[in-house]
Image (cartoon, rainbow, N blue to C red; front, side):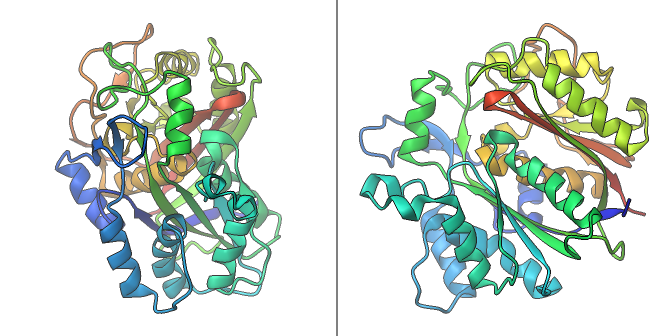
Length: 373
């Protein structure tokens, strides 16, 4: 099978509008999570939200058209524009969008058709003059990681010569209300894997990745991936971690490595009682409990369908810079099985990283990256 590489990356978050500014903020242990009071009939909540004025200013500096764009569309265009400026769009270049909600706010105004995810994907494709029809991956919170898997496999099947994978989700009244109905929102910034964790902190972000079969100047190679659904429950994860465990096993098998070759894990780590416990069980079953592991949710909150791609970008940056980023909010273990949670930024020579994600409906994903020399 063809080797597939990640060559360019970009992210738009409350911590910055490019990878460099985000990395600097992470190294300084800064978080985008703050008290938010912007939604009618929604009490004050902690969330990680992009400043709209700053977003509009950055967008206006790049885009000159007078056509109207939503916040979500502006985030995607800002994330993708520098990659396309550098790599271009060929006749067969793919565009793959991962998101859970897209322009969901349109439902509040009754403009239902505008909320369709295909409409969002096609608008971005038209803006950048893609000639292929865009693909939408919307599979709960594994969407961003699964989109990378789809891109990898389509390039290996010669469906396209290259692909842009993009991801986005924003914090809206609709999303907040949903998590409130689950009683899953934390009253304080989230604390993944910690004994005092008590729920999710939501966030918003956009990410973009350029995927190609050309190894020149690539940041990392995608050497293994798997996406397995254990169909455990509409919202609750498997108590045995079955789907995540099987996804990790399959990704390791495809990569042709042992679990001992994995230098660190960027986990899902939502800070809910059941998700973090499930992951601890799965990682122990996979004999990965001694591998350094972090969750980035303490910096960005849970960005839903964008989380996997956003965290992939930071994972690759960690590999390239040989620096482990701490799992913000963690102090004392709060899961039943041991994990090697990263408690401070640590320099470490690294070659291979595992990125995992899990979501509602029993979906689980695992992707393994190898740093290019």
